[in-house]
Length: 66
Image (cartoon, rainbow, N blue to C red; front, side):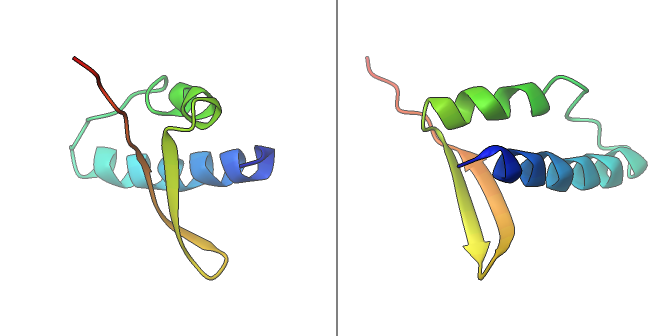
């Protein structure tokens, strides 16, 4: 993933957060999830689901060891 992808992810989340906040579903703030994307990308924990060139889903998947 590159910086353009990071920008597009943040833009998508900005729209999602605006909608959820308008619906009084306040689950994220100014820090999270925005500030975690770069780290998740660097750690190879962030995954994208795309349809052609459009990002349709973003999720972080972590592996935990006991």
